[in-house]
Length: 126
Image (cartoon, rainbow, N blue to C red; front, side, top):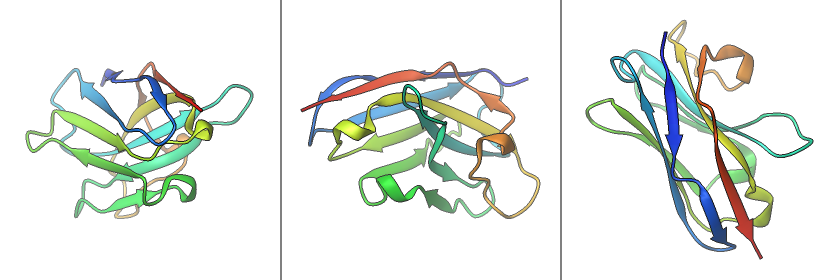
């Protein structure tokens, strides 16, 4: 069982930046595909970004491409989401997730992830 804990959310003005962090309770993220999702009130959970364990390839959702960057600490004990040029539509609860590696394809749907954090709220003001 892997417990994930997000931090770094808060209130930010449109055009500003924010960095989210996620830590794992056990051996860290070694051997897992990891990702960020978000969910706004009344909407389905949306894929934001993923980082594959094999080859450290990255995948991004279309709505944040070019503005957000996913990264992982060298010690494999933390996952980050750097959010730049944020917009009001980025307002949501952000969740980190981890999935055991099952293939070379990086999963991008929520159903493919095994472990989830409790979420951290990001609110972007105009």
